[in-house]
Every structure is written in structure tokens, then in C-alpha cells.
Length: 119
Image (cartoon, rainbow, N blue to C red):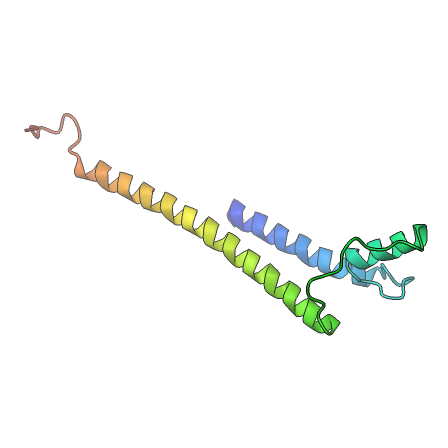
């Protein structure tokens, strides 16, 4: 097994553990909504510290339900991942193209001392 394959398998195990361990260990069982986002946690902490707190501004668009909000967040994450994948793929392709070009240039030249005369 190659070194890259071992690293990829290790990363896959770590990601799976990060997804499963919080559920298996019961983290968040003491909360009413155990796996809410950090926005909800921040809001509850602020209202606990300062009950009369008024927000500085309100959202431009308030989705009608939590499911739509989750879907929009997922769409945003997918678009961001697509942009990053395109960027890294483009640069990897350019590097591979440059390597192929250099390899072709190297084989096109006659090696020194081969008896072929240069014009």
C-alpha cells in the first residue's frame, strides 16, 4: 500500500470518527436542541448575560423554515467546495501540462555526445 493511500485512509477514518463520536458519546444530550449551530449558542449566551440586548441589525432574508435555511447553507457550502475544487484542479492540470511539455522538450533534443551534429 502506498504512502498516499495510507494517509487517505487515515484521513477517512478521522472524518468518520468526527461524525460518529459526538453521537455515540451522547454529547449534547443535556441540551434541548443538542446540535444547533454557533449562532443559536451565541444568541442564548448573549440573552443570558444581557436580557435587554437589542441586535444592531436584522437579516436581509429570513427563510420561512429551518429546513430551507439548512438547504441554503448546504448550497453555499457546495458552491464553495466547487470553486475550491476547480481552483486546485486547474493548478494541478497546469503543473502536469508544464511537466509534460518539459518532458517532450527533453526527448526532442539530441543528447550530447550521441554523434549527431547540431546545425
